[in-house]
Image (cartoon, rainbow, N blue to C red; front, side):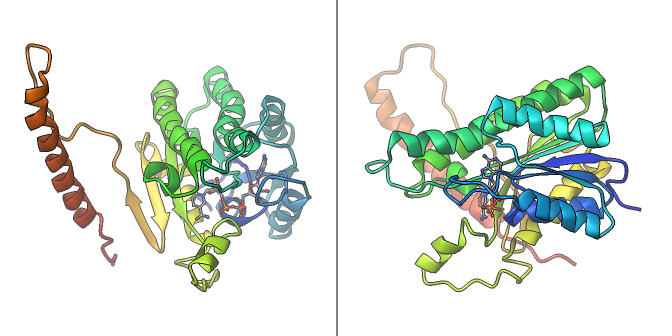
Length: 303
Ligand SMILES: NC(=O)c1ccc[n+]([C@@H]2O[C@H](COP(=O)([O-])OP(=O)(O)OC[C@H]3O[C@@H](n4cnc5c(N)ncnc54)[C@H](O)[C@@H]3O)[C@@H](O)[C@H]2O)c1
């Protein structure tokens, strides 16, 4: 008995890294899995049959899987990925929008193509794969469906040299908040993962900092993300929606969403003299809030 028995999951970018671990874990919990991956390089160029390899691995372990080599970055690709689930398993319950690439450059050096291709895979990719799934949820009246989107601290906090990726990942968090509202009445939850794991996307950055990372370490490798995704996809998570869950270095946390921390009101147009008082007071309140949240967010040991 698995927590995803009878469910059909679509996992994009599941040929490697975090997506592969999610596909294997969900299959281990009973889901039939569409293993999607274009199989390109970390910068999005090229293609290879990594999806087929992971699908075979799942089948070899006694699970059910179907491979898809379509790109998430086009509307046709998104439709084809979704259709793979219907053709192979006759239904769809879970969509994990995990596929991703990097084209890191400072804005000074960022060419239009670096911007466009990152937007296409990440932000547009979420649209392309989610739209057919969401329409299906509405039309089929299938209950208990799940969407997991992939953001990043790069977009939520900001990271030097990643204005394209950060903008896409920030956009994905916003996309998720809206979608959680739009799909609530169909009983479909929409949550966002902010992961941190040693994969081909992040290992070069760690190496650049002079760090040696053990990818088999359960607190560093991509496998740590998978059980959290499976739980969020399971019936136990029916009441959890519109959240950003941060999973990294063996921790699982919930992230703050944009909120007004302090405000002042007025019955006339703000004068510049009033703003001399008000804006510094707001900045001070924000600094106090940030200090409180940083302390409250320190991981607590479990058990
Ligand atoms: N690893 C981290 O620490 C980290 C941190 C923040 C966010 N993320 C996000 O997590 C997700 C997974 O990243 P990862 O670290 O496992 O990277 P990864 O490179 O190991 O895996 C990503 C997979 O997506 C596939 N892919 C890329 N473009 C595709 C396309 N157009 N269509 C279908 N598949 C495509 C790649 O072929 C690759 O196998 C990404 O969205 C990434 O931005 C990762």
